[in-house]
Length: 468
Ligand SMILES: Cc1ncc(COP(=O)(O)O)c(C=O)c1O
Image 1 (cartoon, rainbow, N blue to C red):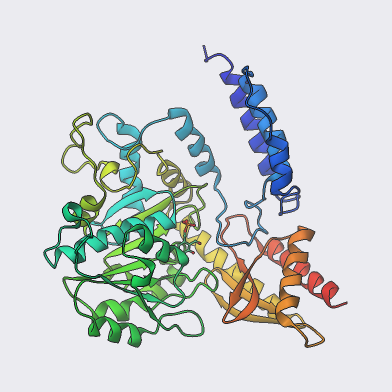
Image 2: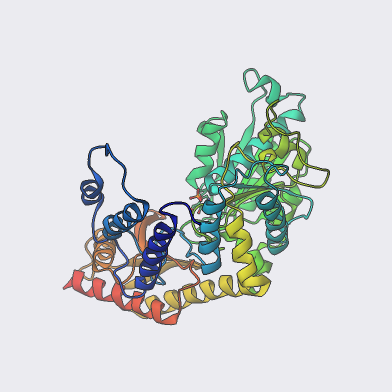
């Protein structure tokens, strides 16, 4: 016998989820209602009395629907947001039903061991060292922060400074080299880790946003003392990758750590057609990536990988008298590699996504997204008054030129706003080398040629209407 109210509540959730997912191909991509309307829809006094579970779920789904972004649509191209694979969505539901605190392996063996296997599969797919440690965290931001915490402690330990014990007060200064076009989450990590955003020594980038490898190597070689070099594979706008191989080859030092932010770009290593572009990345000391982007798991899951498991464990691990002692030799305790103590088994959808696709399916997903981005760029280039500023991997950056030659930035912004409001597709905006631009990311298993063609047609129509 199920718990009272459980069956109808689960059925209501399944119905609402199916309705939502079935509606994706046909509905406007943007939400119908804005944040104020959503607040009004939900704003009511704290209920004094309870409501039966199925009614709660049906009411929740009905009220939320107008304010949902169809980010799972094949024509959603905003930021870098992945679709969600069927097995990963369903596995995520099981994670909630199982409700395991996936911190320790002894009391919670199923989800923690699924996580151990998923960690190995991720290393295998990304061709990273099999001995590396893996933490499944909330996203790229926390993956960067976790890796940089291990990096900070490791480079200071080389100068006999024990951060775990002594903290940072009085510690030697840590140099942090970053490219000019790093993701902003790196700066946030530096703030959280007590290094301070001003610790960043900025190396210039080329037109695509790649840090100049010679400038990086020269800067790293010229610096003394604890040093972290933060590289990037997959610029959030244009997809460019820093020349990691050149940098790691030139800067081997006990007190220097090379970190790679590969929130989505690292997945190019899972695709034979694109792997060579990221050769040598495996020689870095740590890597941050996301499953909720290119692996197409639902939110949220980031992945922190360290070539120095002991540094990772020392930076993150928690032990307490009331917690079990740690797993058997060879069995991993997630608690050692995450900033959280209690935690959701967010690696289970990772396991399910990889099991659904297999190695070949992951490669196909990455390659298809890149091919669709190339198609997008080709079609935009062929349109009158559209300039493709950059295309690499799954990313496209374009600019719409004002036919009167007046204000191209204002025109590009107006085209973006019109296209978003019209609803066929959803790109997002950026500033690319000083000019306003429209950026399109193809990160979903759903995006096919027909979606791309409709996206381009909608953008070109917005461009024409704006200039009329
Ligand atoms: C290169 C890069 N690093 C870090 C992040 C932050 O990742 P998350 O949003 O998963 O925290 C992003 C997000 O787009 C990114 O593109």
